[in-house]
Image (tube, rainbow, N blue to C red; front, side):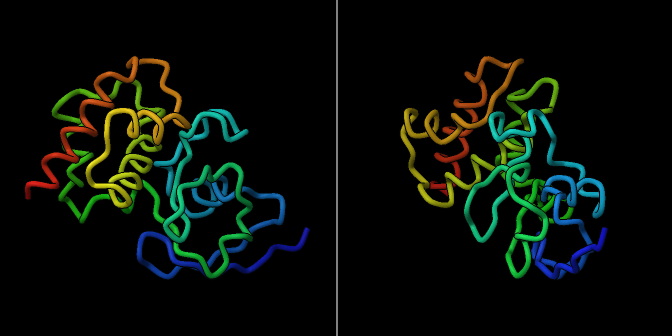
Length: 158
């Protein structure tokens, strides 16, 4: 089967890759580009573990075809930190133990970052609504919600 040549930007860097028309963006990220931070939890867009942003829009990468990324700007969990300096959400998730097995964590972090970029002062209800597309089977969500709220407050006061 012929492969498609795709030119895109991932985590601020120009990237070119070859992919089949049937490959999802998640498969391309993980299998072709070695960006394994995004996880496959369901392959149907129900769990949010594979969340990335495309041109600033939060999406499940298992529902986007790799060829659709052409000309787009993609941010994955690997692009969240600034070198060795973790994003405030990543740091606070660690400090407050807002994670357990780690399968949902990349998607939760990308979704939370996307929320705070749009709304730096969310209510708890807004945080819960924004993260509703991310399923976690371990934590019960309480620490995650509290952590996002804490980071929002800290980022506003900084």
